[in-house]
Length: 171
Image (tube, rainbow, N blue to C red; front, top):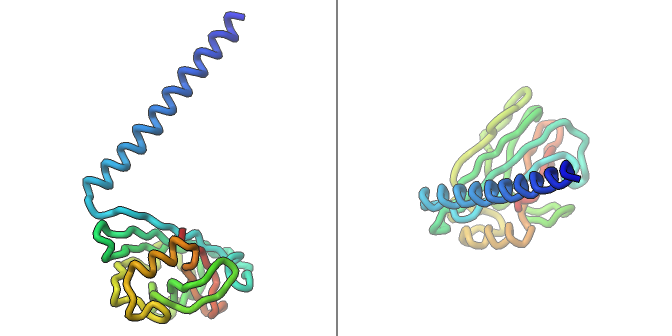
């Protein structure tokens, strides 16, 4: 009985300590963001072939990370890929999951990268003047509204799959 009571009390203590640690980690992250003074909203996209329309069988994967500036005028991004053969381009498109849409922001347009790509494919800053297609002459707020409505995705094109090899909704 004493052993069970000891285990119960120990478990409660560890649970409370873990909760405090998580809370302090969140506070630390918030503090770091506030100290930077720029980042107010983050978005990510996890890219895979099964999200393409139609789905593709590929070993390639990727992740896109976006950070909106405090004043909402710049969207910084980093696009990372793994096991992607013969990359040709990457863009942000407008479209819901399972629906293909038009290009609204070029991310990588420098031409064919022969061989296997692993690591950072592209990084930069998106501003109003970088918007094209359906968002040409619009503002970054229009892109953010589409992202928040689940209507924007990152697509990476390859020589083998010119329509797109990996894709992921921006969330």
